Length: 142
Image (tube, rainbow, N blue to C red; front, side, top):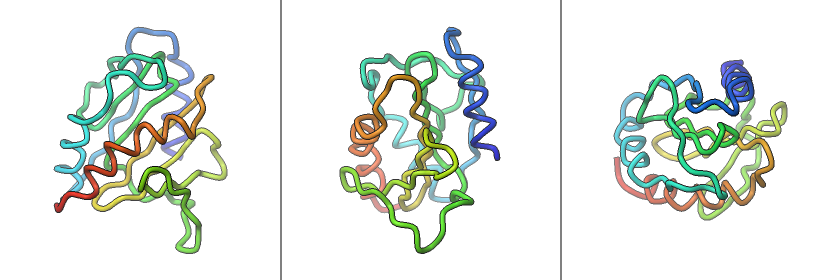
């Protein structure tokens, strides 16, 4: 439900200079992984520049008018079952939420990383570009 609220806020504020995104609250080893990921994320993604988010958080990254947003350290997706197949892109397993076609979660150790891909962006291309820094973080020990 929270992901739907985040998407709604993103869509509502698209076009504004700053995009409002609810920051997650990672715990344990996810904090260090998310801090490291923040330093590896690209400044440009699928032709869009990084955009400030409100409230400012090291666990949130937004590109363009908010059609692409990343939240690091989110809880395990509620809809993800142990038997669900993940789509592997660049060494990262991605869970595609069946109820929200623009919402994807990287299933990594030690952090779940949620990505919203909307607008005119091609999800597979965005996820491929984000898989490289995510794989670097998940490959490192705690």
